[in-house]
Length: 289
Figure 1 (cartoon, rainbow, N blue to C red):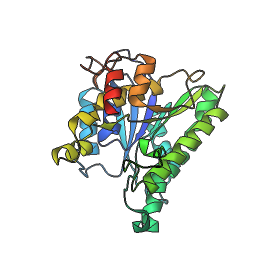
Figure 2: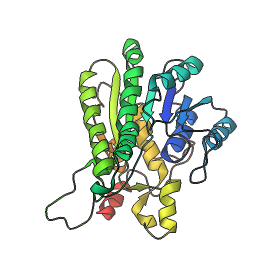
Figure 3: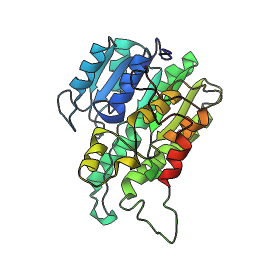
Figure 4: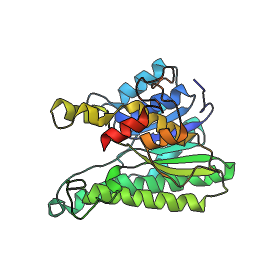
């Protein structure tokens, strides 16, 4: 392990499972102390809870604290989340806005409340958490903002629309498109400050607990997924990148790893992941079509 995050404090939302949990493990292995946000400690979703995440990190000897917060609730103070983390661990160096609300419904079927919740989680929470940590980052002359996005933010190609890509994506795709856009503009404002702001999306479906369930039900093919390690490796790259040269990017996991020629390690940063190294990735992307 390179211990590339030694001495740094990282705040990750949506850290009880999936990409957030996996990234927490990897950042801990790289030496970071962690503030981890989820709605509750004990609620189990797709086989994992925040308490499970903390137990795994404790077994690694990592320093991690939980913060319970419902990011879909506009009354939830996002500033208080950062305050809680910094009171225990010190100033936040890395902010990963990973929590998401991803409703897929037809336009006319959405209630206003469902739209508001998605906007709170996908737009307002990242915006307000970023606004809270930025002054300290700018004062110290270093920091990393990573907003997790989605390919649904891209406009479906067409017409004609030969595939139903983007169908029912008005709310999720719309909120992620705004996330991408304001991140890039923020990065432009931060040029020369030592603070990077980027977004990252999976190149293809990532093998999280939730997505794997769709494979089991026959709704998704295993060969259409990328391992969680590729997404985490790409995220780590954006949490340690040089803000002077790598900021304002809307990135996709496999393309970024190929561009950087970055080896892909397991979540402990100990072993290379077979079949998903930079030399393998162009063929993996081509096979996706």
